[in-house]
Amino acid sequence: MAKAEYILSLIKSHYDNEPERFTTLALQIAAHEAKLGHAVVANEIKSLIDKAKENKQKPKVFNADLQGLIIENVPAVTLSDIISSDDIVSKIERIIKEFVQRDKLRKHDLENRRKILLSGPPGTGKTLTASIIANELNLPLYTILMDKMVTKFMGETSAKLRQIFDLIEHKQGVYLFDEFDAIGGERSRDNDVGEMRRILNSFLQFIDRDNSGSLIIAITNNKSLLDQALFRRFDDVILYHLPSEKEKLELLKNRLARFNKKVNFAKLLPNINGLSHSEISLACLDAIKETVLNEKQTMNNDLILKAIEDRNAAYHK
Image (tube, rainbow, N blue to C red; front, side, top):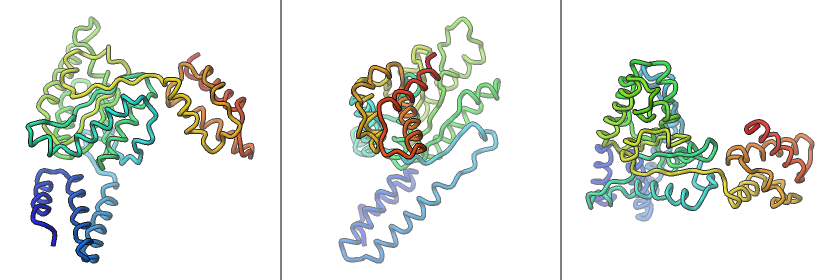
């Protein structure tokens, strides 16, 4: 039988509504039983956990008022999937580490980072970051489509926000507020309207009161558009940028790993100025498709350069 401390922690995690900690403790108990030679019990625990994970991936139905405003998925990306600066990667790792070890922090009256603002140009890894955090913490990712909420429910948005924050409290997960500029704009702007100020004020009140076990991540393409009162509500702000020369090179090598024998990556770098991480990845994918359709085993610089030029033309001209 497992140690009493494991059982107590297991019960506590259940009543504290911490499913990922419950799973971790259950696996620790399974490992403990296996060491004692209780293989049948250990395998039964693992089987129960596997079944629970399968059920977790089935789509859930939200309150009818929130239908079309929230997208749920269970991401399958990891830290190794993001190519970014060491500073950004270390900040992501810190968020994950603090969440996993939040009990240790609480013993010293400290809280883990739960409310995060991600800012930077489109395609630089903000949404990917939210997916990575959700997957690494074994939590579902709930994406709130703020632009749809405001345009569809003008006059009712504050009520919808209240329902979302109720969901955040009662259903643990990573909650991604996409297109956060839709409600987070500076309240003193001349073209602002009273309704938008009320929506932002409501959000500020809800996020202040939130003490749930969920993570809240807001995304903006331009933090200068946001109301200054927002920044002190977030535990961390991560700034994303277009890829550096090192990141461009790493992206090319990573995305073209199967076909890069005749590619001179250094010669390609001057041609991808202004492209985001996502746009570079898409250009690489275009070149790979062309190579496969032409039944070639390798590709050359001209083929990749053509794909890069096409993406440049599509996005920046």
